[in-house]
Image 1 (cartoon, rainbow, N blue to C red):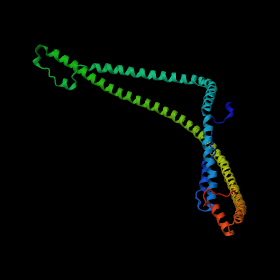
Image 2: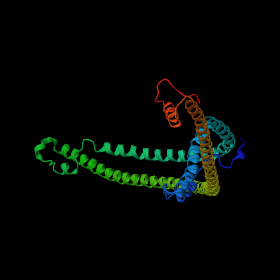
Image 3: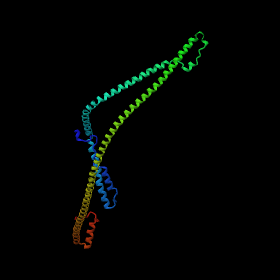
Image 4: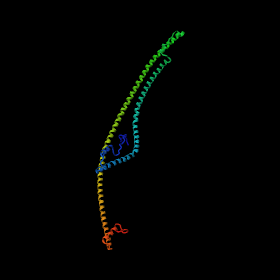
Length: 332
């Protein structure tokens, strides 16, 4: 299959089992009232309905087996075609991606250089902060220094102690100033970090929002197109199914009428045949009775000739015919 042979390779073909929801709706509406089977009209209507519904139901099963038989081969064809189309698209996409990467890589390099400069600047400030913190290591602080009193108890070391205290007081004052400067620089540094993070996040959010909006627009357009195609396909299928269902009902009615005519004719033929058979049986019985009567009369005549009265002869023949005289029969 060539790429231009199908406008939408992602849409699976409709599964046509020979009947759709539209057809089912028509059938439900047609047969929603169950006729009375105790009447000839109701019984014929039930036969018509079943002659429509049963072939449709069995036809769905046959169609399901037929469609499923090709599913594996169809899946392999899809995989092969998808691989070929993907390779073709990549051959078109990759040169464009490579060209775009030149600009993207340069921009990433510039951003990385700026990030490295900013990181170095922050590292330099943090190094100075560590130096300032070292100036106050081992110092008790201004409050402790103010509580120290240098007096004559130091003896000959009083002046040296005062000089040492003065030097220590100056170091503490300088350390406090450096610490205050460090706190200000740290606050400024934190502010710069927050501002940069905010700018970076805003830029990222704008890019993501722009890309998402573009993607959402394309997806919405594609979804709308597929939905329109699906609706149109279902509309056409519904029209086709309605026509098929109406024709099926007409055909079923015609078959039912023909079956009814055939049944009436068969019944008429049966009645005529049975009448004829009864008439023939009656003729046979009449002929047999006449034959038996003739034989019986001949036997009676012989008995009369033998000396019996006619009534006695008839009585003897009757008893023989009825099997009441053992071992004596009349051959008819």
